[in-house]
Length: 454
Image (cartoon, rainbow, N blue to C red):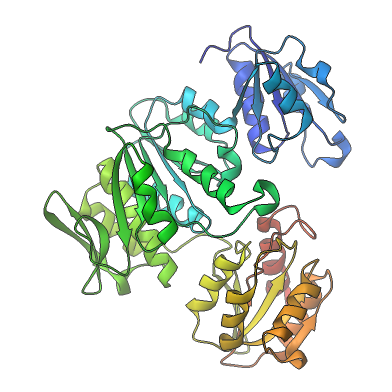
């Protein structure tokens, strides 16, 4: 991609916007970074960008911003439907996402993983698997590190593991990983995409440009994902924790195995996995299949699977107080993810849930709540709907507590009502934006409160 002397407009501040602006400037472009918010409302230090000679424009984004612009790079948080981007498209100005910029800059193959849940665990594990075989490995994307920065850092002769969200796919046209994977597709981000059909279509863009020399890894156990094979123009491999496959990654006799080219490659047993729970078995199978296709040996895969202990904010043990264990699962920003957390425990859960309501159906989630949760502590915007639906689904109203918009109060309630063998689990089933900037901030606050308890 030629950026020298081009006029580049970056829409949206944040991790991706910062990276795109700095990289475009580094390659000789004239760069403007625009965000619809006022600078005072953004929690970033823009001095580095100013020192680089990047022009910063905050507030209302008028169409004159596009005058003379050759390329628009969009941060994932910004939807294509906003007027300034629609105007750019109408003017036939190229509009791309930051991950597409990364692809154009990358000199090493990309392994890209998407799905509603499990992306961060799978990609983190995948990065470690690749590191066991290759000297130069980078991990980026929706995981908190701009993929474009990672692509430049890795350079040639390595591998890149990328977590890709549906938001990041919205403004891609030519993004082409060498190996892609779709872990699952369940209702999420419908406020942004409108329908499940559009949401799934965004996920499927991850492999749209792949050819016969590329690979797609799919979850056989998810019907929506399994049938994607018919739309792929590349080699497809499945993973499954429920079925023995003719080819792919699966469980056989309690052991994770890969069948490839008529040969069986044994990895480790389910009990030997460093991460626990059925959802994590799926994540391990997916990461192992991707790594194997990238050239990682079965021996190296096995070693990493045994040592990997998971990621922060995903069923993360925080502390035990008077025999009660506290777990941080702030990354559960939807009901499907929260369901997986609830399934990890045998019951006796005091659940802290709620937040920025995604308005998805709660029936399946609340069915499991009825089976495994002793007390339900609710926070944030979703508290009223969650309480009403929980009662409709038969949960005892006397065991529901409203903590308002206070994590301090939620944890205090949990501490007072919990006795062994109960566990306290923060698994919100909601986004965090009503109380926090992101799920990481929410999880860190929860952990701080728990750690400060006497």
